[in-house]
Amino acid sequence: SQQGEEDPQALSIQEGENATMNCSYKTSINNLQWYRQNSGRGLVHLILIRSNEREKHSGRLRVTLDTSKKSSSLLITASRAADTASYFCATEPPNTGNQFYFGTGTSLTVIP
Amino acid sequence: DAGVIQSPRHEVTEMGQEVTLRCKPISGHDYLFWYRQTMMRGLELLIYFNNNVPIDDSGMPEDRFSAKMPNASFSTLKIQPSEPRDSAVYFCASSPTGPNTEAFFGQGTRLTVV
Image 1 (cartoon, rainbow over the protein chains, first blue to last red):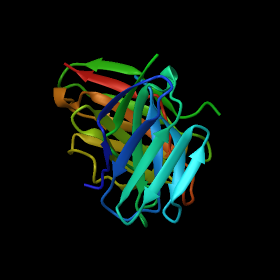
Image 2: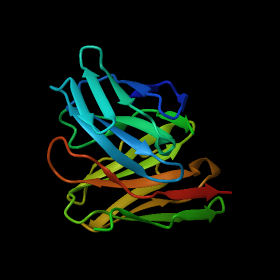
Image 3: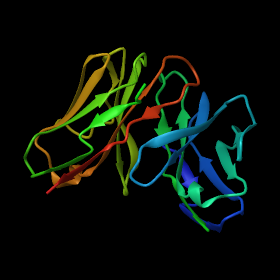
């Protein structure tokens, strides 16, 4: 399977703390993306990091990519209750024509 | 643009019945994807289209599943006959052509087969 795997499966933190989620994948990639899914809703794109990039920031989000280890991490700083959601990584392998393979997700709960 | 639109949002049907899920992608997007999400298997890519042509349907679970895209603004995913194990949330997503593009998801159709 080309699916990635997120770690941990579930994470519970206090508001204001940082949350870190990890993603491991199996194949070479063009890019890796992180998505967020609120309960009962569709996935929403958060950030994309290309295979030749090592770190990227967007607001309170920080993403790192280590292609040698085939892994990525998503850091959410100063978490808020509204960040409570499931977070998925998605990989786009080369030569697959925009195919996206999603990981198993991390369920994040931010306690107010 | 209203985003990717899926219908219905919820569908409850009896085993053996035909189910048709519908999707309207974002205008101008050349790629359309159908995903299935379950607790056990996560988010699975079923099939995707490029310029209305099916490119990879290797994720379609079995012959009971079929998908069509008769034009750039409409796609269907049909299950005939439906079975209880088909119960899941089905998502449609679209993306524009080009490297390093994101997928835009619809709100999903929650299918329950009883």
